[in-house]
Length: 174
Image 1 (cartoon, helix red, strand yellow):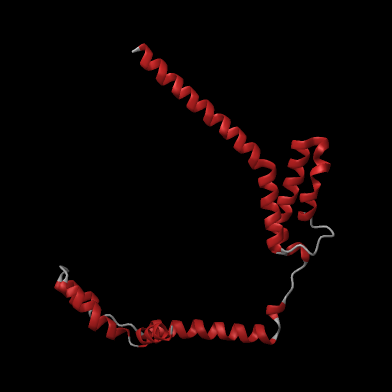
Image 2 (cartoon, one colour; image 1 turned 45 degrees about the horizontal axis):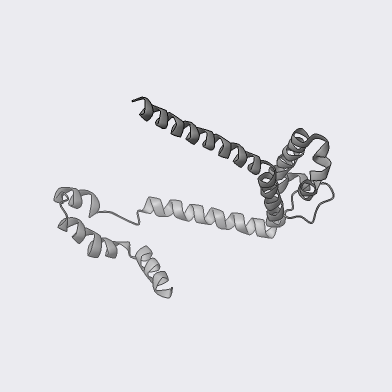
């Protein structure tokens, strides 16, 4: 690992060595135009002063922003509960699953509420982001995917049976 780090740092500090010792000889050995190589590839300036100024400006600005953020505790901000990522993502999913449960199961929806209660936001602060994601995917799979699979299997069976019947009748007629 140290060798890779040393190579990366060496290429970053001395990029012209790689260009002159590896890239230019291989480009000349291949059927590329010599005028193109001598005009555009060979005179590459890796450390143009304008690019270095922009790099220094961006790194200095990032350093100042970090120093100010560390000094004034900007990175320890805790947003309100309603503004967290899991609320934004899973609250609509929870509403959708509750609606779908009532729509699909009607009166039997109360029996299916165990999964939905684990996804609920009210009085359920111990469930984290990953757990809520797993519960959401598991609830979707248990509820809807089995009916999708049954419907798909029925459609595939009908399509294949119809194709077989058509082939048999087609060969029988002709």
